[in-house]
Image 1 (tube, rainbow, N blue to C red):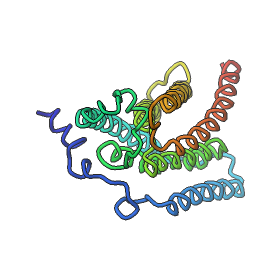
Image 2 (spheres, rainbow, N blue to C red):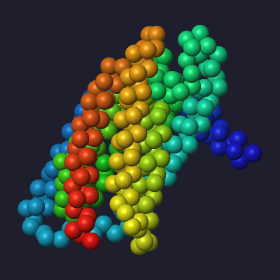
Image 3 (cartoon, rainbow, N blue to C red):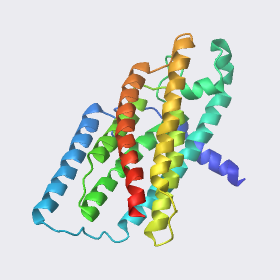
Length: 275
């Protein structure tokens, strides 16, 4: 009974089933809003960093329980989106399997490659929209870092801005690959933010850099999935939907991966000296 209730609220609710990505029906769904949001984020972060630098405070400011509560909220939101899109994907496979027989599409191919003509509507895209909106909450971590540690990372600015744009493109062009990407990303975020909350309330942390390793594994998995999308697109008749946006997505992911690899190597090389 409880499972059926969860399935209803996560997959069968009318707002989920009848969802449609549209500038007139969906909040924050225009290009103008996206550009304005990214520009405001970058300007606000840089301005805050300069303002704190001018004050010449050597120590960062305490934010109390706010970062811990933010981590807890993000862990819970990520977990809900993961369960929601997983159940929704299963429901979509159940309802449209009969149509796949004509195009000889398997469930694995659908996860990586939407058929050409797919529109951003229905269960899966509702949770993609929820993931897109959750990206705005991730931006707060940049301001936490600036206020607490007086540190503004170029990688963090690029990473957060790029991921916000990528999640917008998923919806705007009904891009293939997004189901797997959201599943992998949300489960990683649930672990990372849950761990951050765990350590923020004073509990003992892991004996290895869990956050850094989780993010490295996530980037590796996403890279493998990108290769899978390309292979399916080349061999599948008609190709994959939103492949142009996917190419742009791949370029952004490559930039993020290179920047993160540099950061990862730097972190791993400095850890022995700290010990």
